[in-house]
Length: 212
Image (cartoon, rainbow, N blue to C red; front, side):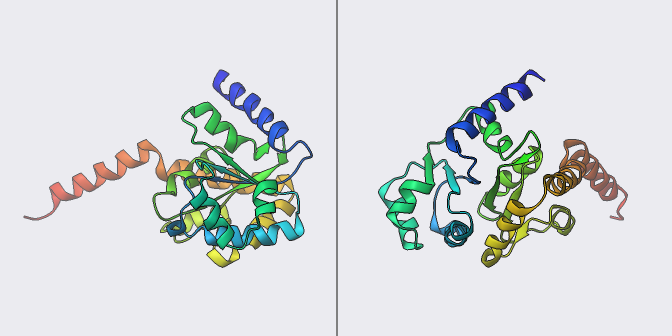
């Protein structure tokens, strides 16, 4: 409980710091690399700014190096937008602070933002962390769990990221809560350690009983 309170306190501080005027937030956690398909995120961000001009894109795990900025510029994002709407945040090792970044997106009954992450290229853990924190999340790419995709209703084709983000920004908090709760319960039942062990025990028993 104390950890949860600490996470919430940091989340409120982040909201005050990054969005003092209640700007919308898009959160990306990971390095900025072309091979992750991030050009689709930045193309969607351009369109989001047309509808929500003050939106902030927080890049956690990015240092804002010249090569990262050049890649973002090559995606059609201007220097002015990079300096005004994009925040580069060095990698964070503190688990409480990382949790607070997820938490601030849906806190105190308010939808403040969304996690956007590719499913492929080792980013599945970000997707699962967002679900565990009950944060709104848009994941783009392929996922082999159709049940989870159906429950979250937040999986996007790379070229449809904008519509999914816009859907979250415009949805009522009660609808976002329904989606995040559904995704959390399904993920907990599907990916829990107990479920993992049970499946492996069943497999082991089948192998023992299989004719030699």
